[in-house]
Image (tube, rainbow, N blue to C red; front, side):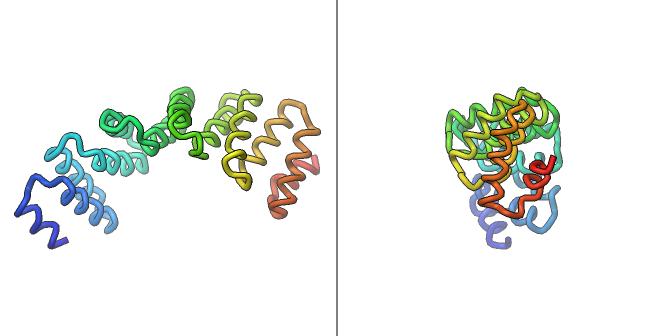
Amino acid sequence: RNYLLKSIQLEPVNPFSYSLLGEIDLNKGDTTSAINYYYRAIQVDKNFFPAYMQLATVNLVQNSPLTPRYLENALSINNKSNDAYYMLGVYYQQNGQFRKAVENYAKLYELNPEYVLASYNTGYIYLAELNVFDTAIIWFDRAVAIDSNYYDAIYNRSYSYELLGNTAKADSGYRYLLKIKPDYELAKQRLKR
């Protein structure tokens, strides 16, 4: 910490030093000081992408309405940031803005089809929030194609089939899941229905 403070005295326009001081304070639990250092990094360099992402992360944890603003600023600097699109999706999903969440997960999927959480979260929204089960299956299929051991995706795909009335596919999925994850209790319960 002392070295960073000295580096700021020598080079007060270095946003990295402010950003690192913010990380140190955040790790110590001093969120207010961390935020102030991130702001200072942006004052020094308004295009300093890491500071916007750090501010967005702190605000996302607090579910602050400022979160999208920081992420949109970050995306204006780097419109190919997987993490920024993912965090926007999470923010909107947590706040019941499911269409916006899906839009951001879709942008992420376009950038990086292997980002499994984009597929899984989209499937989950279609299953649990929008009740569009056939679309949920498509997204869970994508998640399982990326990670064949994504147990929750396998379960939710099976559950989506069940909700569509296709108990044969649902039961097949539950049995497959129990073959690779024998202690998955929800699948056991669904087969007992």
